[in-house]
Structure formats: structure tokens, C-alpha cells
Amino acid sequence: MLSHTAIRSNVDRQFVPTRNVAPDPASKARDNSLGQCIQLMGAPMNYPRNTEIFGEDEPAEYVYKIVSGAVRTYRILSDGRRQIGGFYLPGDIFGLQFEDEHSFSAEAITETKVLVVKRSALTGLAGRDASVGKELFNLTSRELRRMQDRILLLVKSAQERVAGFLLEMAERACANNIVELPMSRQDIADYLGLTIETVSRTLTGLETVAAIEVPTSRRIVLRNRSALNRLNG
Image 1 (cartoon, helix red, strand yellow):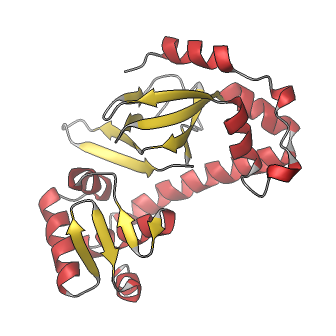
Image 2 (cartoon, one colour; image 1 turned 90 degrees about the horizontal axis):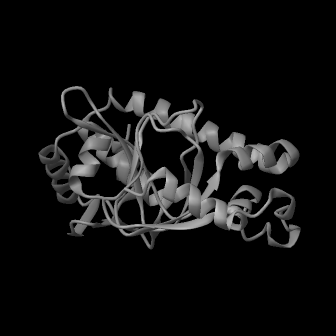
């Protein structure tokens, strides 16, 4: 794991003072104000596959934006099981906390590059720039909704959970109905609160009814989105 000391050293060395990062109106069509500010202020950090980015209960000093790769957040339960809180893909921002410490750990799923910015710098800028403040609020609201959706997930059937997951991933990163999954079957199982056997069996069932096609373990072709929406409940 890259220590907080290493991250702090890199961020401080490349940190751009907030007075120099007012969003450029001409570039807003390419990126939102918050994303543009992180792009300008953030220090690049590279993480090999399965490397921890931050740990549960560590100080939440930084905010992260994925440039390439993918990240999972997780915690280890008292019985040793792993609970995955979320997946983050290129362009996603993660690490925002309501508290001063992280409630989950974060780990690179694949070779991953992120931009790291001080949380204090970002919140300070948000206090001076209404558009950044609004986007920061919207981002934290989406994270809260994601947590609420996970609670509702627990009352759904395995088929509904898997169908909903595929639709979620299709909405976030899909080209021509092809969903490329950076995460493993075990990751999906730990995210949905299922066993890996149940996930595999459910995917096979969805393929049997022609809702999806599974050419490889990491590629899913959505053949019938309407069917998936119906199965999602």
C-alpha cells in the first residue's frame, strides 16, 4: 500500500493553489466544474492491481478521481466475509466522507491511475465557487442514495439483484450493449450479497432466456434490456 506519507508528499509537491483553478467557462462543455478542478489540482498516483488506496478508519484527507482502471470499496465483516460497498470507474470521484475517517477501504481492481486532491482544498474551493459547491453536494447526495439502494437490495431475489447490477453497469460504462466488467465474479457476489455460485447460476439463467449473452467471464452482451428491466423488479 502507498502510505499516507507518500501520498501527502506527492500531493503537496504537485498541488496547485485554489486561486489558480477557477473553472474555465470554455471548458465546462468538456467537464463539470468539480471534475475540472480535480483535473487541475490533483496529483497523479498509480496503483497496481489489488493495491490498497486507503484503509477503513484511516483519516479521510483526500478525494480521488479515476483516470483509468477501476476501484472497489469494501470492509471485512466480523465473521471474515467481505462486503463491497461500490465500484468506481474512469471519471468517477470517490473518497468523499461525511465523517473524518473512511468507513470503507478502497482497492485498485486493475492497474489504476487516479488524481488525488486534498479534501480541505476542495471543500474550501466549494465555499467560494457556487457551481463547485453544488456539484460537491450532488456527488455526496448520490453516494447517500447508493447506500440507500444497497439497503433495498437485500429484499430482492438473486435474479433481481444480478439484473439490476447489469443495468447499473450498462448505464455507467456500456458501448453497443456490451458491458466490460473489470471486476471478478467474486467481487460481484460480495457486492450483491450473494455467493459466487449463485451469481454464476443466475447469469447462466439470464443467458438461457436470451436476456444476455456471456462470451467471456468479463464481457456481457445485453440482448434484451426490456427483459432485464422487468426482472429488476
